[in-house]
Amino acid sequence: MRALSGKTVTTMSREAFVAIAANYEGVDIDVGTGDGRFVLDRARQHPERLIVGLDPVAEAMQGAANRVSRPRTRQENVLFIVSSVEQMPDELHRSCAHVFVNFPWGSLMRGLILGDPEILTPLAEIGRGGATYRIILNLRIFDDPVPIEVQELPEVTVDYVQRHLVDPYRDAGLRISGARIVPPEELSELPTTWSRRLSYRRPPPSLQIDAFHE
Image 1: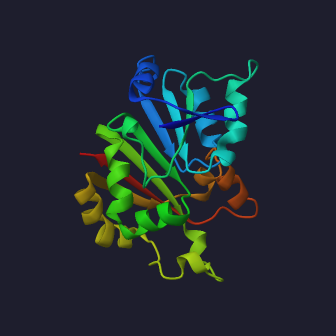
Image 2: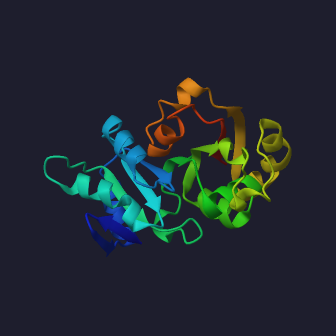
């Protein structure tokens, strides 16, 4: 497993990860964390938990990784991992109690919307039994002009989730427990850079999928 410490990417074994996690009540993960803002905020609010940020782009997380490694701003309960979902590290297998995916893009977004097992299966495999999953999708991507990357995707609604995603999520080991449109005032309080940018003029229409690991 490739972990980011300051500006350095190092290799972390399963044993090393387990030893770190043993110091906390549990492990939470933000998948596709980007600049890691959500991770830093959750780590401050839950010092008793190990908060992991996962993203394939090390440079995106570097500012947050530098911050938690400095003496004055150190946060011991933060770990950044350089990886995509498709190449999910085996070290994370069945380790996480809470899994968050905030405003995904690219293959992660497509897989969640289409119910692709290549995305859902590794995502499910990092959750412990009973682990909770919260996925927030930015629906503004379907506004005109629709980006080329999403032109072939179905528009996501609560009805779409209930009709088309319940079965593929369950096949991967995730039971969808609810889907809802996120109220603007709730979305604007979400501690992510994307929620701040998207809410600059008006909060984007967003849909939340809640699930748990069976």
